[in-house]
Amino acid sequence: MKKVAIIGRGTAGVLAVAHFWRWATDCEVELYYDTNIKPQPVGEGSTLVMPKALALDLGITYEDLHNIDGTFKYGIKKSNWANGGTFVHQFVPPSVSYHFNAGKLQDYVVNLLRDKIKITDKNVTPDDIDADFVVDCSGKPEDYSEFNMSEFIPVNSVHVTQCYWDYPRFQYTLTIARPYGWVFGIPLQNRCSIGYLYNNTINTLEEVKADVVEIFKEYNLTPSEHTNTFSFKNYSRKANFTKRVAHNGNSSFFLEPIEATSIATMDAINRRAFDVWFNNKPLAEANIEYRTLLAEVENVIMLHYFAGSIFKTPFWEYATSRGHRNISRAFYNPAFANMLNYSQQDIRDLYASSSGFEYGTWSGSSFQQNLICLGLYEKLRDLHEEIGGKL
Image 1: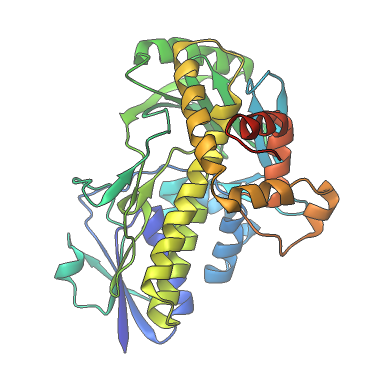
Image 2: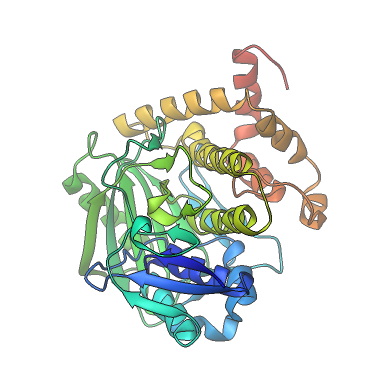
């Protein structure tokens, strides 16, 4: 019997355990983690990938949401982007996604599988393990020599405040442009997480703390003393898969959380690792697909900065300039132009097209909704003419 080992008990680790326990049916699955290393409970929103994956892998359904402080997520409410206004990037009815407490999800999955897999409390590396295949979800790297760093994403820090409430007051993720960056809002059963993304070389934490008060007022939220502030790098691996090891979670990539792309990317990595190890997928092809996906996800992120915001501040001058450079480069990739053309169908046809291709983690309907509401179709045509072509 072959053995698949997963290192790490964070969200990426438990999703990998669930995936390989469900689909690698002829293999022993073992989870390694060190109880002295606490998983970082981030990324508490997702796309349509998560409900389906949890249901297929573990039988987790809507009835289980209370176990992970979960709420339904039918879309992403965006405010202050481009020329202003508010819109909701909606998922195709009747589909919904989840907001969830990452720490509770991790505990819940491990408890469901505790009697079905082997669990070892030990700090290990892939070289320490006697296993045929290893999914390394051990967290962010100490050395970035094997990674490509994002040259465009303009935010590198976040300040998160937990705002406790008696019940969730909305069922969408907040994504609000602000003078120094943008703010997310994640509604859970007992609290709303408010996170302010910014660049610490342009603005100070004190400025961010003063400005986020406006969000508390607008949404009638009471901030608690439970806050967390940290900086991060945006990166992805040069090569993510080998014949024996695949990396996932922060061991593989980190791109800022706008559009909640991380869970869908984790799922894509698990699927490609499975195909390499069990379905004879060429290793080079899997690594090309990985790099392509991460590049497309970054382009999806940068479309927001290309759109800009209502604010005229040093951050937004910096961010929109980077957005312009990134999207100018994206035009040279046929996949971007193909999605741009595909997304201009009638929205009802895009809703009906279950076989429609994706760009990054966006479907055709997501692409259309955002490009219309962010005023980007006309801006993209102007850009294409600027760089020497016409759409």
